[in-house]
Length: 116
Length: 110
Image (tube, rainbow over all chains, first blue to last red; front, top):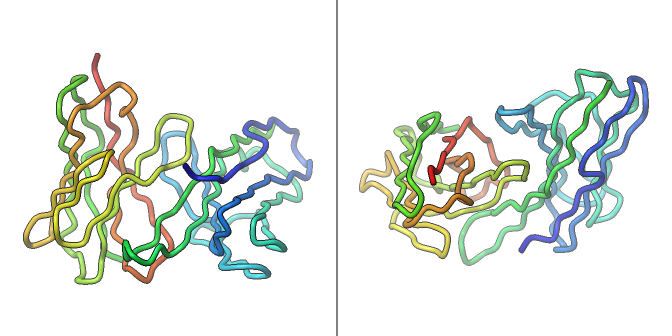
């Protein structure tokens, strides 16, 4: 059972508001990720981090920003929300397990964001 | 990156086995074959992975062709809770990131 949490699960907010989506994991994983997924569509990587003070942009350009001040915490911020930001945002973490020879990713339940 | 090809959707009856195919003709020697699934309104979850040999775990089995150009995820006895989108993904053993495709949407009929 993965211990990765996201809050809020659902958020409806007006245009122009600043929002922060929270993601926390208690597994001590160094690597963390944010994905964006529109309904019925593929997941796209928008941000990732390989440890404290490390952040990189993913394959899909996003107006959001992230920070990694603590290992367990990887929040995503939108300075000024717009209707085009309406989507599901999924957080994940991973660790190299050694014996199985490959990384596994553990996902949170997601935050469904609606910007009106 | 090597790509995978999966059917858009499949249907199966409850309590019957399900075979989900995946083609990956450009797979390289260091690529692992991973399967994840995404249940409705949830984040993806790891199902199984393999390199060359067939693999079994409590969730499923993975059958890998001898030339590694295709693989099949096998759910031995589907339940309604197995209805999900199943993603077949290739990853180098040094690569921590996942590139998701469209996957196969599996419908289970009661």
